[in-house]
Image (cartoon, rainbow, N blue to C red):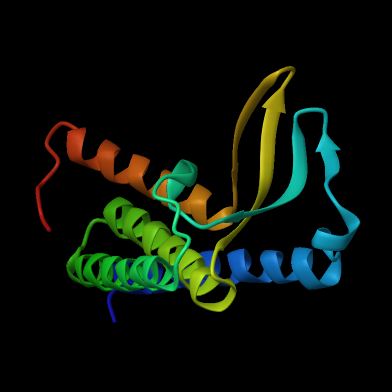
Length: 160
């Protein structure tokens, strides 16, 4: 197995396990649903939000058909991006794809098990409130930024 493939698999595993472990701890260890939100810093709270849509709460799904459609989309996206990752040699692209795959799998599992994605990090400042997200969401965003950087970098080879 090549070094980029090992890197990709390791990143997928770390993101997926960290995301799921923290969600399980918040739900069943801290019992966040029963104990309620708490402040970590003056600008960050831990809250419980069930996101039945995708990023930023778009495309909210209230039916089982919608829920399972989003699960299927997560699986298809993870497979497609995972195949790209497996064929890729550039470490930044592999790492970026792995972040996205790990995040998609984490959020997909949430939808399959709970019917919604478990979001819990709420960033805010004064009256400004950012959306509520989780580790999987953050990994997906960082992965997309990495892919964009790689694609716009001067002399970057194109592959997919």
